[in-house]
Image (cartoon, rainbow, N blue to C red; front, side, top):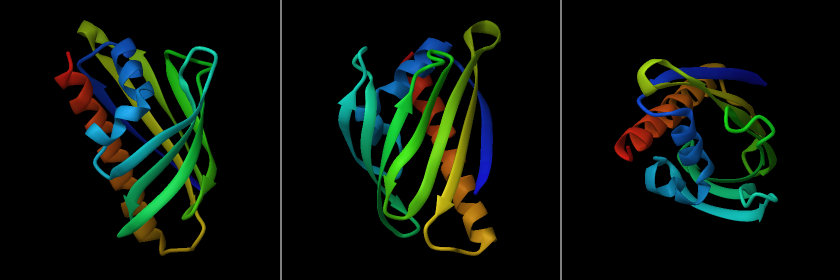
Length: 146
């Protein structure tokens, strides 16, 4: 299992970034490879707690269920995988830090463990694509809704 990270400055407040990341039902509108999202349960504040996803990955469709953790909200949103057909682990987090002039320094971390072994260079390329796309798509979404 490897943990990788990507960092970007987004023209928006940490609260705006948090709002976009926690609106999981709208992910298919802006997350490139995501096909379906279903909220299975919510926490006491109405936020998605357990969520089922279907996405395109490695040339096929994959399904997984994530449990969200808001203990450090609104500065961080974390999740752990509860179920997955291609992955044993798909755990991660977004960290939002206030930057200068209304910007936010966003870090996206992801730990992936696949059920089927694949060559490391293929795995690293896929992880890099996922990380870059996730943070790029978040930046575009936050900045286009300002």
